[in-house]
Length: 122
Image 1 (cartoon, helix red, strand yellow):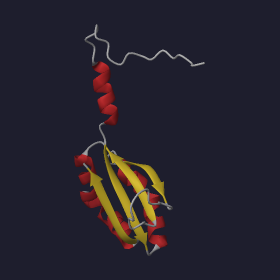
Image 2 (tube, rainbow, N blue to C red; image 1 turned 135 degrees about the horizontal axis):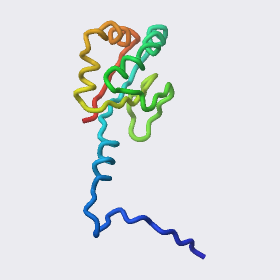
Image 3 (cartoon, rainbow, N blue to C red; image 1 turned 135 degrees about the vertical axis):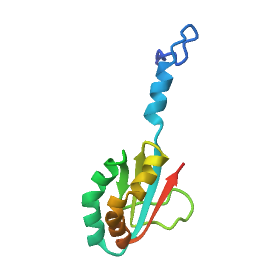
Image 4 (cartoon, rainbow, N blue to C red; image 1 turned 180 degrees about the vertical axis):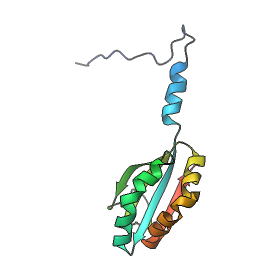
């Protein structure tokens, strides 16, 4: 016996209202960055974490996911001690965050925690 489910029509050929496409596009129109760190100074990283969220938020950024236990899904990558996925409204916001002169000391603190990398996806 198979269950039958009514599926919503995604494209209504009788309607010209495509506002949902614009709304959906705005919801997913983000840019992401991947942060990786090989930590040599856990205290510096802990101090950085206390301030990082507010600094990201000043530029519309946030931490989407973070883990101290990343694992390889495929291949043999260099596994970091800490990894995070960051999101920003756009690439300009991400660059404004990293280039913000008022955050220079905070970025220096992050870098002092060990070997860190941030890869912008887009």
